[in-house]
Image 1 (cartoon, one colour):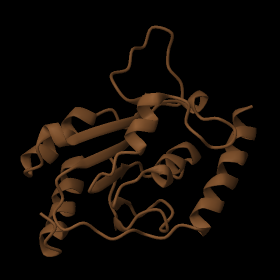
Image 2 (spheres, rainbow, N blue to C red; image 1 turned 180 degrees about the horizontal axis):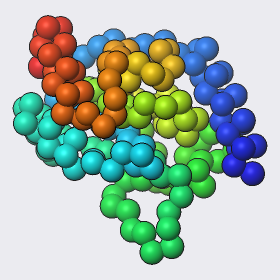
Image 3 (cartoon, rainbow, N blue to C red; image 1 turned 30 degrees about the vertical axis):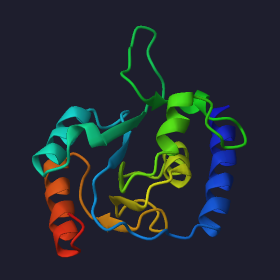
Length: 170
């Protein structure tokens, strides 16, 4: 069943990417959204702390986590979704996920380095102005890409802010 749903999600992502036009990049970045694949990367709090060290206020950072499946006794904090929270037409059924995706962040960090239809769909559904991610995912998905491993989160943030300073976005 998961395989069939992934085929449908890939078709939806492909259609949305064909019609995707990047929006104008904001002047200064104040609000940040992060989409994380918590199936492989579990250091979400440390990633947020790195952003705070670079000058982004913690109250202006929101995260959305994707998990392949939840264990019976596993409890997730705030905003997360699984494959079950995506309808067959590509819409999200959880209210907190929809609210996250409708928030117009100045920058969205797509913190996943493998093409995954549920994560790509969330990125395309987001109202963020600037999308940043890894170079290993589809290059049409992000406005700015960094070639690095996901485990090196502090190096990723340092590299990101180096280029944001050059572009005068912070």
